[in-house]
Length: 122
Image 1: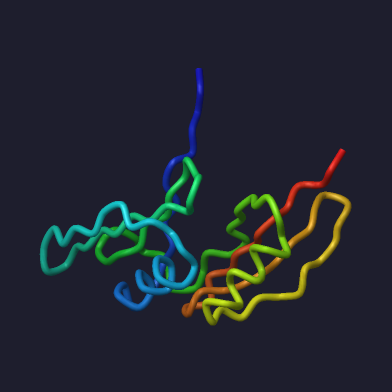
Image 2 (image 1 turned 120 degrees about the vertical axis):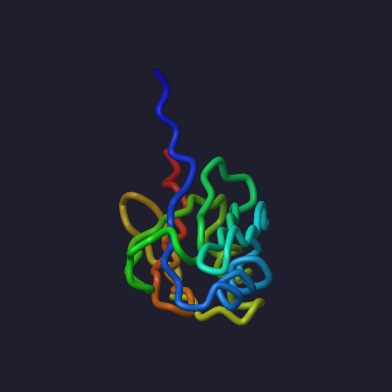
């Protein structure tokens, strides 16, 4: 039996600001943006090439904005990924080297933290 992680909720304070950050700056694809009611809005975004998406919105999560920590995406090239972020106005760490890969760290406007990992070459 396969268990596939397909959606992770990311708590944000301003849905439109977060949608613009993730789509226009980071480069995620906007899959859905549905306003179900005045209290419920669901936005789903997917990193290019990923089988797992994130959701932002209102009315479906009790998490405080900025409390998603350590979200991680695997990239082919940490240097190129960092440059992509910098070119789009996103503050990103220097590339950091660990035995388990090369990493770049950044945060969204609410303080949710992300790591981009280039897997080690074996």
